[in-house]
Image (tube, rainbow over all chains, first blue to last red; front, side, top):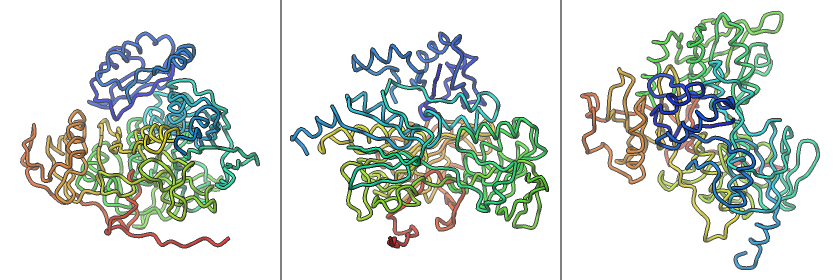
Amino acid sequence: MRLVVDLNRCQGYAQCAFLAPDVFTMHGEESLLYDPEALDEHREDVARAVAACPVGAILVEAATSDARAARTARVPVSGGAW
Amino acid sequence: MSGDGTLEHLRRDGRIVVVGASLAGLRAAETMREKGFAGSLTMIGDEPYEPYDRPPLSKQVLLGKATAEHTALPRRREIDAEWRLGVPATGLDMAARRVRLGNGDEVEYDRLLIATGVRARPWPNEEEGALGGVFVLRTRDDGAALERALSAGPRRVLVIGAGFTGSEIASACRERGLPVTVAERGAAPLVGALGGVIGEVAAGMHRENGVDLRTGVMVTGLEGDPSGRVRAAHLSDGETIEADVVVVSLGAQRNTEWLSGSGLGAGPRGIACDAGCRAFDVRGIVTDDIFVAGDVARSPHALFGYQFLSLEHWGNAVAQAETAAHNMLSESVDRLPHLWVPGFWSSQFGVNIKSVGVPPMGTEIMITQGSRDERRFAAVYGYQGRVIAAVTFDNCRWLPFYQRQIETGAPFPVPFETVDRRPEGHKPMSADFPDPSVPTHGPTITLSGYSPADRKMTFIPAHH
């Protein structure tokens, strides 16, 4: 599961580090480190982290079938407002 | 071409070619599909990998918390493209609308997006640069190789150049417990990007974390052992540093050589384009069918006196790609200007450094919140009586506030009170940027015209 965090947007609220600690960790007071290709077993945790991020900074790759459906429907896949 | 159906034809059956398959190229391609582009899309990239994210390479990857091979960028959507990876573009025929590839193939386009980015500036002495144990850090392969070298437990790492990347590498080395020396030509780390006042704070962070920081020195030569591995570096002050890993971190060079002789306005400073991302040709005439985005672009910005800015920023690559993609598929009146406010982040020695605006334009600086000694503060840069940039160390939640100050041309020195203002923050001081005519290792914004204070480039027409 690929993911990327827009660290311009990130303000270090650390919600993701709390909800998906195997994927996101705080490094110092404010810096975030994350695994850009998290194991699938953390998918639910990551989904919670995406939903909880107060600034909407986390983008997770949508499943391929979702992407196909979204393309037909012409709506954004990820919900990440970049 | 408005109203004659050309654009409709382009959107339905056109051929769009993107040269550069990294962050900007990918996000542009996604945006084109999102906007309904149904024609053919070709992605050309010189690296054999699908688009990946570079910032983790100098952070998570060097700390061993992620691997360079697993940094591929998540896709926002399918882009249904033909990928030509592992083969560089080597030429452009503007008249025939063709891109030449390194394997001899040619790809025709109706619209071209150039997002070829930058590459690490290599060590100037080729023979020394080829010694075993000498690295640069820009690509996935660079990241993997350097991480392997650090894992092997070198006796000492030498980092040449204390820009953001060099500082992050030094930070990762210290965190891994490796002895590290940093040699910087300027007076302090980050001085080209953030000035001397902030550079002094950065220098303190290096030293407190056990970095052997040498400033005001140049590395004059690298010395190999009989097996062709680096063993020492000689400094301009006469000293010798014994190191078995050397990381050359001297900034970046723009990937524009493939365009030489094409007639496009491309050179060592990047590819000049208008605010709508359309490339200029060498005559200064804007093209209709060639667009530019990301690190390789230089474009005028209304907030900064219409100076042409080259931004080596992750966020710029995304924003400019989206604007370029939109404009490639739009009528003239529907095009958008690229007005992204520059912003970047760095993580080093456990401190989160973030910035908005264009710090190197600043002549003065005020520490408006917090304290430099505590490594937690916000500072504002002033230029001709207005706020032009801000930087925070572990204080990023205030940054959007300062961004609005920049966007609205707020006065400097700041007339308002701020939370946690200390005695040191009541008066502006000189931001202490080095002379712009002296090259620095790590500016991430290059001001490349038309301020009268800037050193001008000499235009020498090529002879063919």
